[in-house]
Length: 418
Image 1 (cartoon, rainbow, N blue to C red):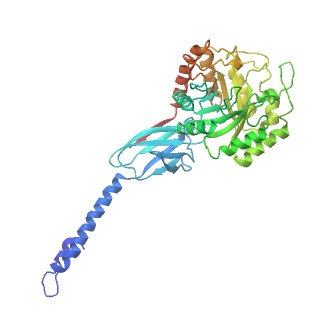
Image 2 (cartoon, one colour):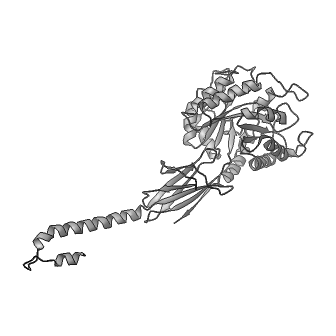
């Protein structure tokens, strides 16, 4: 029965019952108007969808966190999709993050109907920097300036060196504040544990079980603290043969098993890495017996490159690309492999002076054959290293890395459809 029929109803004596129906009629009209208004709101707030895919393969990524205007909407399902409700018309910030992938952020413009579909492709490649920072006036680390320079260079993974020195400066104490600033900038962190047991190293020296336990515990408070790496670890494994190894006997299989068990007991997702060199004819080179013996007790390798990309010798007959591919084959696809390329000339590695074209070639080889390139000792400011080299490396290598990393992180992208 429609409204006109209802109004036409009369009482038994034939008289209209307007007086009786008027309140009811007003209620019906008000209800109809409210439903129409609610319908309009629903049209503005129609459901939107965000789909997250792997940039290289196009495969859906489950478990990616989706944020709208810095508010977590939820995580993607097995199809890579996430329903986003109550989106009003206008511009909104859409951000996607997932462990092991580059974070992506963009602005979506929502029309009056309030619905959009976003297909976001994110890259699993990291773009990293090792150890360098910006000095403040006291010649200590300026956390804010360092993070800003890293972000400007499109660095998304930073290897943090918490050393102390004879002047009393201790970057270990600055680690929490750095982690906080880095997290706000979308930068993950791996802490470098000194690899030379003969060195007194604050706060845990050569007690690597204590190192890994503390850092894995800290990672539960700072989720962007992703792991730890023992620097120059392979020097301590290779024998003291003609390549100059220094097997101290510290890193036995049993001890490595203890370190790995310690981190797993606190945070299994925290990554334990070790460091070596891709160049072959030296003490720190990665050899098959090392990987075969210790692979069960590490989550991956940081491999450093400091030679010309075409350098070839008995261990490395095909140059850098061949050697990285060889290491990847030995390590397997289930372990992380980062490749550090020397783009600076710090005091402790005097004489390493890579040319600009060679650095570019090495970075591209690292990007193509590993989980990501790391700019080793990239100068972030003019006065980072000594006056003989700073201008050369800061004003040439920093723009090179900034351009390369910017192009690579741009591989992550978004396609928005109405």
